[in-house]
Amino acid sequence: MRKNHIKFMAAGMLVLAFMTGCGSGDNKADEGSNSIISMNMEDVGLNTGVQGSQVDAEDEQESQTDVEDEQMEENSQSQFQTVEAIEDELAAFRAEREKGISSIGNYMLVQSPNEENYNYGVGDISYMSGFDSRELNEAFKAASAYIKGTLNLESDAWSCIDPRMTAIYEDEDKGVANGYDADNIFLCEYNDNGNWQYLILVREGKGSDWEVLYHGSNYKTE
Image 1 (cartoon, rainbow, N blue to C red):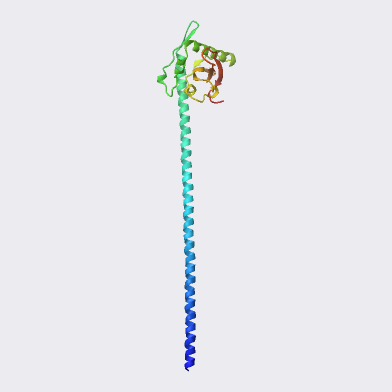
Image 2 (image 1 turned 45 degrees about the vertical axis):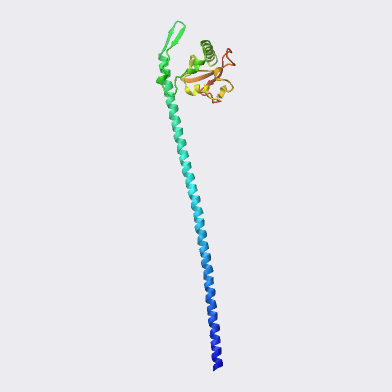
């Protein structure tokens, strides 16, 4: 009986040890599983954060692009309105200039409008102050000969009153007249069947003959 009791107790101890061992193994397995789940959750959170940052950056870039597009559209519209306003001022100035024409014998007199009554610098012919009367006469004579002889138009040569053209005197990039100093450039305008165009005359230096270099609407078009 005693031997059997000892065997029974020994068997009971083995069973208990086995159950305890299994329980400990299960806990470790659970801990490992929990650890893996926890790590996976952290990865998901990290990835979500990165994706969120990318989405925010894309949204910000799209927003910046929209702002730039709006600014370009506003600038374009503003420039268009300015061009229209300048054209209106030019038309008004030329109409007033036309009314101020009178003739005495073989001479034509022109009462020039007051440029202070116009905006955007329309009518400012201060560039002519750099030339004496002889230089002006020679320049207008060469311009008139070109208009009538080369262009076959009946228009007279007028002082240029368009600020977009007279800007050539201050512009470092003189466009078609590149290489000439302001002292050797002269501007005129003429009426080509209702469409006002411009002449650019140049000379090699003071005392040299004026020659027409360009006729058109913009000194930077070519």
